[in-house]
Image 1: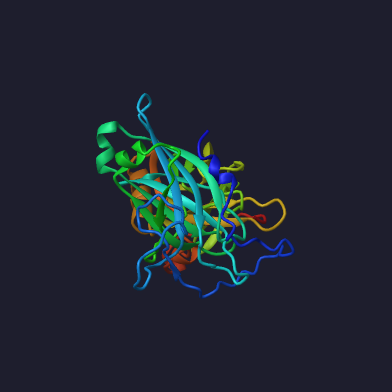
Image 2: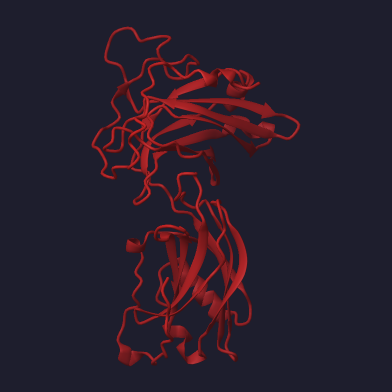
Length: 354
C-alpha cells in the first residue's frame, strides 16, 4: 500500500480549535518566516536532520510528494501527501490550504486538491496522473502552487515548489516521500478559468445564438474544492442590460460541459451597437450566487472579444468558436461608451432578478 505512514502525523502539528466555527475573513500580515529544518531536496521529514550553524533559510513551510511512472500507460503518477508549517493567512491563526499542480511547460492542464480548513499542517493524500512519454520526462518539471482559500476574495498564494529530475524522483519508488521547501510566491494570482463558446448571427432572421460549449480550470468557490457553475449571457446596449439567458447548473466541477444554445433577437440594424457579457457563476442554494469571472464580446470590446465579434459578423450563419479568459468584474469595462444620438434606440425588454 502506498504511503501508509500518513496515518501518523507529526506530534508537533497544531490542532484546530473545534469551538471555532465562524471564519474571520480579515487577512493577517504574517509572512513566510519559518526556518527550513532539512536540506532542500532531501527525503527526510523536518526535524530528522538539521543545518550546521548560520541563519536558517526562510521559507513558507514544506511540501511532501511522491512519484512513480507507469511505463505501460505512459503516465506520471503524482501523489500530493501533506504540507507542514504553512504560514497563517487568516486572522484566526490558520489557513485554508489547497494545492494546484502543473506539468510544465504545459499550463493548460492542471489538477487541484481539496481545500483543508483551518490548518497549517494539511494532509492531502491525493493522486493525479499526467500523460507524458518516457522520453519527455527529462525536459518536464512539476509545478506546485499552495494557496489559501478565500470564499469572498481572490485566493492568496502561499508559495510554490518546482520539482525537476522527474525520472530520478520517480525511480525512488512510491514509498519514498520527497520533501521540498515551499518558496514564497512572487505575486502570482489565482486564475479564474476559461470559457469556450461559439457565436452565430442570422442577419435575415435577426437572431444571435450563443452556444456555450464548456469551461475549464474554474476557480473553486466551495470548500469541497469545486464549484456549481452555470453561465449567464447578458445582451448589453449603452450600459443597460436588455436581455439575459442562462445555462443549466453543473454540480461539483471545475471543468463543466454544457453544449447549450442561448438565443437573442437582435435586429440587423442594432447588431453593431450591442455587446454580450458572459459570466460564469457559482450557484449557492443558501446564500447569494457568486460570479467566478466574466468576459465580454462586441464591436467595442477589447482584444479577443472584439476579434470574436468581428469574425461572427464576417461569417453570417456560421458558428464561430473561441476560448475566452475570465477576468474579475472590476477589470472588465462593462458599459458601452458613446452618445445615444449616434446609436439606434433598442427596445428594452423587462429583465427579471438574477
